[in-house]
Length: 480
Ligand code: SIN
Image (tube, rainbow, N blue to C red; front, top):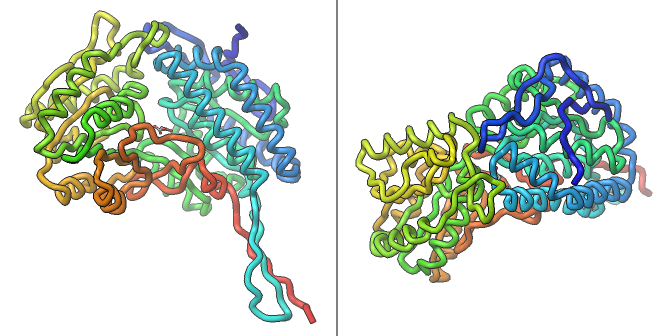
């Protein structure tokens, strides 16, 4: 199998080395995987200039020409999914099968937006007066800049880059410091399939603030997109205001997972496990607060405990792994801090609650906590780890109000059977994405994004393209 390891920045179609390098490690073993070029603000400016230079040729290509190149990139990702998956698993820690699943998921955005490039329509507007005609065209925003996270090192890039390219924009990307290798491998494949120089540029760096400031403040950048925490998103949005950039932000979540008294308990447990343990719980749309109606609490917890006992934690390259290590020591510390706080305030540890030291220092046991209350930190903050924190509620109204009692509104989930309840609750929950009797809700066809402090804009779906387009209204006069 070919190696897709690249360790330099990718600008204007060239691999650019730097003297200063940073180390990328395997979280399962602590081994060094590579030393990667450490870009700085000057390199970020160079990348923006390259994207600007490439813009006019790229936007002049027909949608079909852009779509054809995107499809070649998509196919190349699938052809190389084993190598890409192994690389991702090594630097990020998720099981290889799950990493290959992410490659397919990431590639699906490229395929989807290739199609959307060809289905990009304007509008003919109603005639205002007989001597005039008006219509709307969609145009590329221009140079875009993206900052992407480490938890989905492939899909969070393609979900931004593919719609940008489909719309006719060029882009500069700062991949995460913890997982730059998956990003640089994508650059290599893009270049091999003929995506022109300068259309996609990658600046790996440890200097997130300096590079981020170039992305958010450079006058040539017209659109900025970020996936990460709400606090960083707010600061970046403020920086973008100076040049009035178009922004889309996928920020933190605090997803409720509600189990009502009419839920099918087996389905609820299965879907919660699928949702919670994806990527070891290091997922923005992971269930963070499990709210269970009092009358079904004991039955639900009993089933859940049985299922947790079957979960296999191991390095990502082992067989049949459910999840691997957390990303680093900070992630472990955060989980332990939240658990400690919850237990100090009366929560009960049913199972787990420890590092699996026999595997290594970053492996955390599947953990179940009950008697959690809304006031505890674990119910207020993103856990980002394999911990299920169960609270109870008395009736539907209380369940909904507890679920909405957060400044965040990314994903939400509930399990119920009564169709009138399904209708009522789905209208009242404050979130951008909702899973009903379903814990896996991500797909390129779906609109990913949040309400409240969880962000602005949507990714994927037909709405994802609009984030990279301007709407121009044209009026033609002079009709007799
Ligand atoms: C995320 O955690 O930000 C992305 C998860 C997804 O796309 O499903």
